[in-house]
Length: 191
Ligand SMILES: N[C@@H](CCC(=O)N[C@@H](CS)C(=O)NCC(=O)O)C(=O)O
Image 1 (cartoon, rainbow, N blue to C red):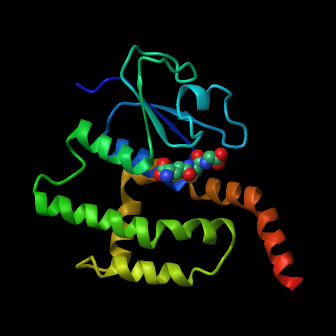
Image 2: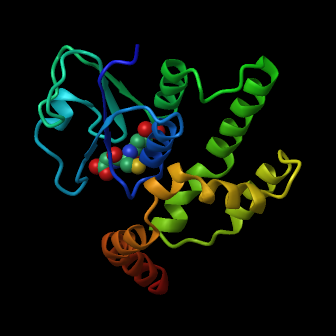
């Protein structure tokens, strides 16, 4: 039986979104708590994640308000580990066949190596997406169909629509990172 589960997340962050997608896909019942990363609750690091990052899960123990996490629940952190955890408790996310499972994990590994590390430099620092194209070519080689088809299928899923609000993300990223980009541009210009 699946126990009480609370996801601590922030909807502008891709690592958080992947944890939320994993929970939405098998339609697990969970409580979602949005962590304001600019103004984190004072209990968050001490009671949920000592690294003070999202996403994180509190699993099991008595039901409680998400802003009053209990010692009795298990705290699980690191988004890729959360994905494995959700796959384990739902028994739905991964294919049954071991070869297919290996393929899925190979894909996850390729995204982790070739795509995910570049997102910060592009979305936050405004650097060229040139290296991302190489990463996408790597992913492309893993598909029988085109990568665009995968992306379109992904965006059409209810789980994706529910967890991705592009206008909000654009707004938040612009507000949070425009000063940093401007500073970076100015310091480049001064050399
Ligand atoms: N390796 C971690 C990275 C988590 C991470 O860096 N989270 C960021 C948001 S994407 C965070 O919470 N940063 C804390 C902060 O901005 O104060 C994972 O995959 O869960």
